[in-house]
Length: 262
Length: 201
Image (cartoon, rainbow over all chains, first blue to last red; front, side):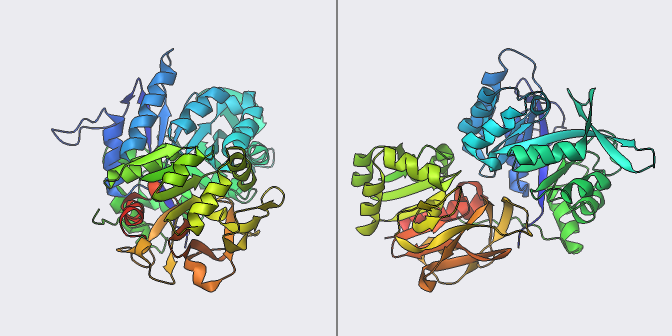
C-alpha cells in the first residue's frame, strides 16, 4: 500500500544551510547537498529545499543547487521559496527537481499555478499555504491565508484558497501553520484534517513537529499524506529511522530503508 | 549504447545520472537515427499522454520506437513511457498509443487522492531479468493520476495496490514499462536501471 511520507525540509540561503549542527568532524553542516545525502541515507522519502536567498544571483544559486542534488541523490525533491515567475518554475523543474512549491506568488498571480501545471503537469506544482488560526463568531476554527513569509494578511479563507489552488491545477498542497511553526508542540491537526476533507489531492503537513508522536497525530487524525519537519532532524533530536520505527509500531505504513548491491 | 529518448517532457538527466551511477553511459536524444542505432532504448515521460504522443509524432520518433520494440531490442518505458506502449488512453480526450501491448490507460477512480504521490509496493507476478535482486513488496516512488489496465495477463509483470490492483510493471520479451520512477527510487530503483542495462535481452 501507499506509505506515508517523512520529508526533511531545508532552508537554504546563498547556497548554504541556515539551520543545522555539525554532525561530524569531516562533514559540512552548511552544505545542503551534504545534508541531502545524509537524509537520503537515513531513508527520507523526499526532500524540500526552501531557498531564502534574496539576491540577484538567486536564480543561478537555485539552479546550481538543483543540479547538484539531482546528480547525487536519487529520491524526489521539491524547491520553493520566493518562486515568483513562470521562469522560476522552469529553472526548478527543468533543472531536475520533481516539484516547485509556490506560495505568495500564487495568491498574487494565481495563473502561475495554471500555467505551471499545464506545462509540467499537476504533479509538479505544489500549492504552499501559510495559515493563521482565527475564530469565527461561533467559535469555530477558521484559518486566514498569510503571505510574504507569514507576515502579510490576505483576508482570505485557507480552505477556500486550498480548493482554488487544486482547481487551478496544483497536484499537492503543503499546509504550514504559522501558529505551530517553531513551537515543537505539534502540527495544527485540525487545519490539515479540514483541508484534507475538502480536496482530493495529497496534503503535506508542515509546522510544529516536536517528535514522532506529532507526526503520528497529523498523519492519522489530520489525514495528511506526508509530514515535513526541519528542526527535529537538523538538530538531531530525532532521526528519520526513529520516526519511521515509531510510526510503524503504531500501524502506519512507512517505507523501510533498504540497501541493495549495485 | 543506451539511448534515452526525449519526448519533450520528463526528467531525462536524472535517468541519465541513474544509469551513470550504476556504471552505464546513456545518451539523451530526440533524433530518429539515434533510436535506430541504439542497442537499448529508454523512454521516460512525465505529464500528459496526449502531449507525449504529439511530441513524438512531431519529432518522427513513433515509427523508429515501434520498430525498435518489434525487432526485440530492449526497451524501458518509464511513467508515461509505460502508458504509451498500450492501445489508448482516456487522459484529456482519447489518444492512441503505440499499441504494442493491448490495454488501456485510465484515471484512478474517486475515493483515493489523485495524483498518487509517494512510495508504494510492487507485487511480482512473474520473475524477469529486470527484477533480479528486487524483493516482492519492494517500495518504489510513484507519481501519477492515470494507471495501466493491461489486457493480457502474461504482460502483467507486477501490480500495485491503489484504489485497485493495477499493472505497475508491464513486460513482454525485452519490452518493459514501469509506472514508477526508478531514477527516484533510491537503491532499488537504481538496481532496476542496472538490470535493464546488463540483463535484459
